[in-house]
Amino acid sequence: MTSLAIVIPYRDREAHFRTLFPRLSAYLRQRHPGLDFRIHLIEQAAGKPFNRGKLCNVGFALASEQYAQVCFHDVDYVPVDADYAPVAGPTRLIWYGAHLQHRYDLYFGGVVAFPNADFERVNGFSNEFWGWGFEDSELRQRCVAAGLEIRYRDGTFEALPHAHQGFGPAGALNVTAERNRGLLKSRWRRLATGEAQRHDGLTSLRFRVASRHRLSLRDAPEALHVTVEI
Ligand code: UDP
Ligand code: MN
Image (cartoon, rainbow, N blue to C red):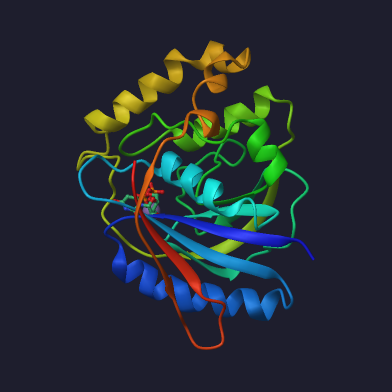
C-alpha cells in the first residue's frame, strides 16, 4: 500500500495539535488499516510572519524520500468522515466543516493530498506568501497551469475554533492578506506560462532545522516534530 506523509504546518496552536494528534492517528488506523503513514508537525521558529506554504514545502522535502504521497493538513480540522486513501492526482479531502464562504471548485486549502511526483511537477508551494492567505489558491493555479486535474473528496471535518487571522473585525481582509492577494494577482499571467513557479518553490527552498524529535502516543506510529527557521 502506498505510504503517506501527513504534513501539518504549525505555530502557536498547541491546544489544536493536542486535540488533533490522537484523533487523527486513531482515525487513520481505524479507517485505513495497513496504511503506512507518519504525522510530521512542521513548526515555524519565532520571528518572521507565519508562512504556511513554505512550511509545507519543508515538510515535503523532509518526508518525500520515505513516503510516496503527501497530505498537507491544517491543525484545526479533525476528520469525522474523510478518505485518506491514495490519490491519483492533486486532491482536496475536505469540504464539509470548512469555512462556508469558500467556493466549492476554487477552495484548495485545509486538507489536500498529492502523489509526490505531482507536487514536484508544480514545484510545490510558493515560498513567498508571508502571513495569512492565498498560498493555497496559488498552489491550485500551479496545478491548473501544469494541466493536472483537481480532484475532490467531500470529507467531513470538525473545525476547531480560533480567531480569524485574515479578516479584521469588520470582515475585510487585513493588510497582510491584502498584500498576499495582490501578489497572487500580480503573478497570475506568469503562472499560466509556468514562469512564476519555475524559480519559486521546492527548487528555491532554503531552511534550517532548529530541533527535531519524536512524539509518541500509545498504539500510534510516532509523529515527527521538527522546528525550522525559514
Ligand atoms: N497555522 C498555525 N499558526 C498560525 C497560523 C496558521 O499553526 O499562527 C497553521 C495551522 O495549521 C492552521 C493553518 O496554518 O490550521 C491555516 O491557518 P488558519 O487556520 O489561520 O487559516 P484559516 O484556514 O482558518 O483561514
Ligand atoms: Mn483555521
